[in-house]
Length: 414
Ligand SMILES: NC(=O)C1=CN([C@@H]2O[C@H](COP(=O)(O)OP(=O)(O)OC[C@H]3O[C@@H](n4cnc5c(N)ncnc54)[C@H](OP(=O)(O)O)[C@@H]3O)[C@@H](O)[C@H]2O)C=CC1
Ligand SMILES: N[C@@H](CC=O)C(=O)O
Image (cartoon, rainbow, N blue to C red; front, side, top):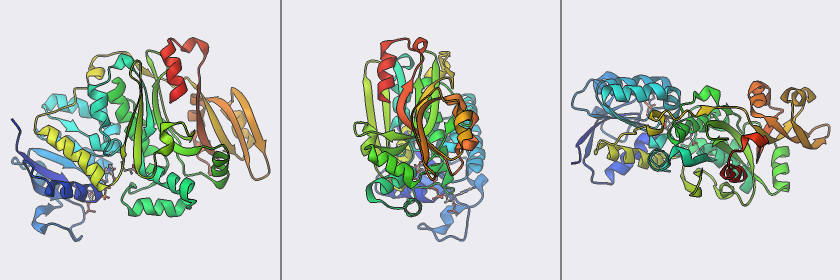
């Protein structure tokens, strides 16, 4: 039997308005009782009596059984969501930073208070990836996930590569279209896709990784030299988060720009579209594609979660509760393109092997293999504007790390 949902909505910006548009176009068994916003002076598209700036007016209202949290402040979102769960209300949220940062605690709260927190809209907008990772893939058979998890940076890269637009004007467009975070360094610096990767990894492997422990390097230092290099070799550059098993118990994660070849599924994923490539033992490679940002695509994912709450759906975190012993490691070699200015950086990164080197007064690069842990150790230097790094897509394994042929296949693909 479907429950009648009485909703308290937090946030009425791009996603909040997008959700409302969809709700108004459907005949659903739900009602928005009150909406919390920050600035009472803003003009709204609904009657002003529906709005409040007092969060407790919603959180303490016993008529409201469902909270939909769509605000742009992760700290306030944490306070709202935790209080709602403790007050016996089910919650839908799209706040990936808040969820990734507090996921373990949020899982415990749901169990303790018998409430449900759903967040499909937080990872890749309209792509239904969380429920698929949660329900469909068994941990033993799941090898890798990768893709394009940030609409704004993909929009910028598409405009640069396909239309020769400047970085600055493409970023401005992504902001005007409502794709970018309030602070766009979260997008272009690879933080937003890192939060999404941390959430997806929890559902793919049952492994909760503190996002601070995942390397993220973004596209903010991309220069014309890097664009020319990629174009000459028929690559595009995409910002790609990856989580992969390197053996049956160890998982590596990173967010790096990637040189993407024409035969890669990600090559034709453009603008605000996102994609998730999944590699499983016998299913082999699967590809999810859809809009990753914007009010209506994200609103659609939020509505799907709201609809699921009518039937008391909750994530069971089965792989986490199985205590499967998987751990997070940084112990792999990656092949990278590195544009740099200071030779000391090459020394500090302790390249395992350099296969290509170019040096002129204004442009120097190397292609070589480097340990992920050395990239992490030197992350601050890699953020210098004279530096750009892109992963070539080739992982190099030490012989003893490869335990089955299926892992070798996964290596070739993602
Ligand atoms: N935009 C997108 O494409 C996507 C966004 N998301 C996530 O969804 C969330 C919302 O994003 P978006 O709609 O773009 O953000 P916007 O900036 O468009 O809107 C934010 C809303 O939150 C309100 N707000 C801020 N702080 C508070 C607070 N303390 N209490 C109550 N309301 C508050 C603002 O109020 P006021 O109107 O008064 O300023 C505004 O209505 C974010 O977590 C974002 O990361 C997820 C997927 C896609
Ligand atoms: N800023 C994000 C919005 C959706 O999550 C993005 O650009 O992908």
